[in-house]
Image 1 (cartoon, one colour):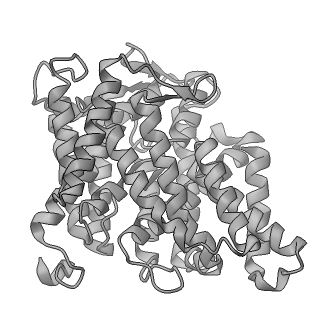
Image 2 (image 1 turned 90 degrees about the horizontal axis):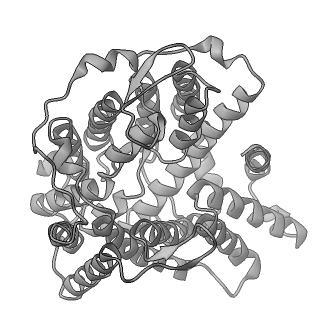
Image 3 (image 1 turned 180 degrees about the vertical axis):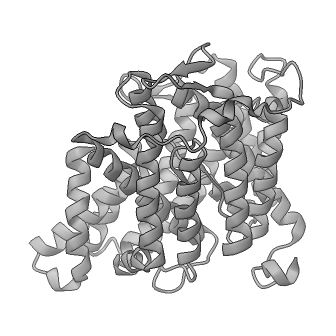
Length: 440
């Protein structure tokens, strides 16, 4: 493992990588509960019949989500040797799931959209175009991505735990609720352990709140820990493509949204998490970035063939990095957890938001430190990062924040006569970014 993962070279150990992998998984485990409901619908109904008469079950979605997340994350660890974990991204799943539930799209049409966007990803990765786009983005924007993600995932933590409310404007949550109190306790536990330099503080905080939540009714124990997966319903979601269902004017828009959202979400996550792990070079680039990009692209294609919406690199990987993860061994540990989840899903999905939320808030705090590298004495350099952070946080989307930040940076440079400082490719990139805001 030392030679394969280069543990000493990256200043880590097997124990640290295992703790980091477990931490990443526990902050991501919610996807196993959310993904089936995002596609089939929230509520007691275990299945939905699409407009083609195909029955799609929550169990099939959960099994394939866990299985493919484990396989693609394993690919990331062994091939790219980065501590990044992948699963079905939040965003496209809700958008396409809502259209499935309302009868606007068949499940096969959904998967065809994901497949096409994934193929585009693969082509861009193979020909190095994704890497080119990364390199032409100015350093101040790349540096700010980490801070933007920090604010965004802290916002997720506040929202998921109920510490903050956002349904009818920004407000304070109900601090009489046990879940909110436990979330605050979890945040304090993580902070105190970190202050004493305890390795795995985030993981310990998640476990502590999960256990404390049992007597308060926040953590709901499952009827059984082990549940053998039933693959009988999986055949309906695997290789289910309905290309005839794409013959509409809105199809191109949906493909563009799926492609663009994953591209910049992955870009932001990879650079942001790598920045936190001190893996970026002096120009803010990640050496070997083409490998995680290719894994992400292949993951989306494989995901489409197995009934999964866009497979993307998860921002929760930053929790594992904060726990000390620096190599692909972290990803391997996370992948094993996902694979085990196909058999132990009742155990993994009991982790409440009150436990994972504080972890996200704390990691968000740790990631915003990157903003100190932005030159705020130069307004034309600082405006783009400011817009990126504000849009990413208050619009609740990493992709939206990065897109807005890039556009703001280009516009302010052009309007102040500094257009020569902009890479020519950035002007071309602005075209799809503007389209993203128009159609999304």
